[in-house]
Amino acid sequence: MWGGGKHASSTGISGLPDETENEKDANYLKKLIDNYEVISFDLFDTLLLRPFVNPDDVFRYIGKMNYNLKFPMQRELAQKRARLVKITRNKGIEDITLDDIYSKIEGDYKQYELDFEYKILTQNRYMHEIFEYAKQKGKKIIITSDMYLDSEFLTKVLHKNDYQGFYKIYLSSEIGKSKVSGNLFKYILSDMKISSSQILHIGDNESADIKGAEKAKITSYKYKKVSEQFFEKPENRYYLDYYKNTNNKVQTSMILGMRILKEQNSPNKNFWYKIGYNYGGVIALFYILCVIKISKIRNLTDLLFIARDGYVLNEVYKKIKTDNFPENHYIYASRKLHEKYYNETESEYKNYINSIKLKGKNAGIIDTCAGNFSAQALLTKYLPDMNFIGIYMASVLNYKYNYINLSNKPHTSSKLLGFVWEFIEFILTSFEPPIEDMKDRKPVYRKDLTEFDLNKNLYFNEIVKGELDFADDYLRYFDINLPDISFEEVFKYIEQFWQNMTDEERNTLNNAKSPININQNNYVSLVNEQDRRKKKAKEILSFLLYNK
Image 1 (cartoon, rainbow, N blue to C red):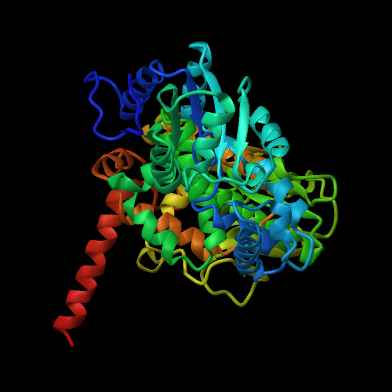
Image 2: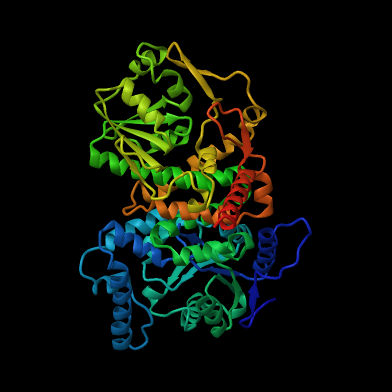
């Protein structure tokens, strides 16, 4: 029997050779639970998780959504003032309530905070398994938290996340005693009429959950925060510096927070699904949010998603679209079709274009990038009465066409972008073969398919599934809300991956091919293409230095 304020850690646990670290930890913790009658769980960062890197980013988000960038500081100061006033004036009181905090803040953000917390707080599947194990073993389960939110609200959140059958919630704000001091644990022992040797507490905070329990001579188990688990992995360590140095803390925290949650709750997804969720989904979703914002400003009636790179973008848009949004159309207007039909007046392409039922006269051309603006040129020619605006992630400078470029970096420069543009096209393109022509208002696909075209579906479906899952998760947490989107930060995020790929990731991506010519029959590896470009740049630099 454990007891007397001992501390059990999840690190350095031995297990069977074929067990994962999570499985080793879970099996160890379950054996530990067997020795106690009462199991106490911490709440935040243990049973429940948020889709943010840092809890304070919740307040940054609330501030941005309410156009009050001072809100995070105001709330932090209000919490400190409320704590100082209440604890100083009331001997024996060790914590405060949410009402105490908001009594010190001008403006009514309290309900917004409650509604947002209810929406984003998510089950930790690993800890849910532990929770269910304790229930099955007939243990009495309690929730113990230093928290300003009340038990009625937290009970609803727990039930929503399938935590049922716990005995009681002990909160510092309601009882007036904290875990940090150890007094909340002592209160629990008295209230439940149990000895310290009968209870095990599980939590993530060293001061509150470990040292606080020790003060009451209760055995504790240190559960490492999922964000710490994520950033400690060698392949993820560079993301921590990226997060700390980002210019848009909220957006970056959301991207990484959602990724951490996904890896925690769905750890066994394959490589291509993760590429889709972690990168394709991020760039597609944030691009579409920018498109929607621009559409409202420019009163766009239609959005023309250019095949094939617009496939995933169109699928993501369909998840968001409501009746008052622009109509979406998946349009064939490739460089090959431009080359064939731009100088013709009566053609198969005209029949195809005339068959598209447009909602109005103001249309956005939606494509990943624009080099020679072939799609916009072709559509402008065949739909001369339309008012077009191209909306591109990145493009070259062009004074002829009306367009918006979301990035100030050209897609032609991997040195400036930090990654090769073909990677973006690769993760967003459709499963269709290259388009050769139009016939009877339908695309004619190339028949002499390459090995890459034939094998594409081996990973394409998983990539798209990951991308659409990211969109679903984002909409579940945040709807379509995010003011102040920075596409530069999205590119920086992609750059972190590209510049820090593991050998395994590089070897797997080495099998992914991308076309480098207009006929799309000459494919090169994404990774090798990067190496080739670097080599070419070095050769040019050497030449310039030699001839200086």
